[in-house]
Image (cartoon, rainbow, N blue to C red; front, side, top):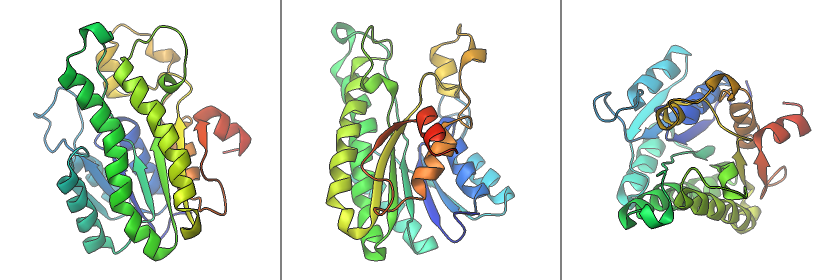
Amino acid sequence: MKFAGKVAIVTGASRGIGKATALGFAREGADVVVAARTESPEQYSLSGTIHQTADEIRALGRRALAVRTDVTKEDSVEEMVRLTLEQFGRIDVLVNNAAVAFYSKVAETPAKRWDLVTNVNLRGTFLCSRAALPAMMKQESGSIVNISSYAADRNGPIYIGLAYCVAKAAIERFTNALADEVLDHSIAVNAIKPRGEVDTEGMRYWNPDADFSRWDKAEDFMVRGILFLGSQTAAGVTGQVFVDEDLCRIYRL
């Protein structure tokens, strides 16, 4: 169990890739902080809550902390980190997974929607990283894994909304630069993105008529890749952006 004695924070862990990742860390021995906004099924039209994910982690024999977290709000993120350190005493891995998209063309996108998408994806990644770094720097170890998307660099028609594409592209640049900043503290910073569509509650909601049989499951490549990157320090792999399937093939995961 490669994460025995370790603590991982996963944002956006009430469902989708985030939930699958949180459970993946638990199966490898980590105690997990489940950070997301959904506390009850009635809040949103999508299934999954932080408490349901935390219960599944505990069923695997690991400790879990469910913290309602709005990654766009500085005080909410700082409180999440404070509670993590209060209960677990350390932060070994941060997975910046929380995301939202708005499917429209620029001419049809309200400014408040643009701000929401860039704030959740990009500002959230910045705020959570900044909040977790002091603990990692004190430990002289840690790993930050940022979740990007093929939308960051794929040419052609944009079906997921340009705000999302721009935010994910910025996350990749953020990953490269932050890795250099924290290199001397033995902290790894990497990003990973799926090769294409991943079968999650959110993707099914936005694409109800799609052929889901052709989509990857989160466990196929993304979770394996995230766990590998979460085990890194600056002495290993850092400052890189990977496509999940390529990463799994290169490192035989």
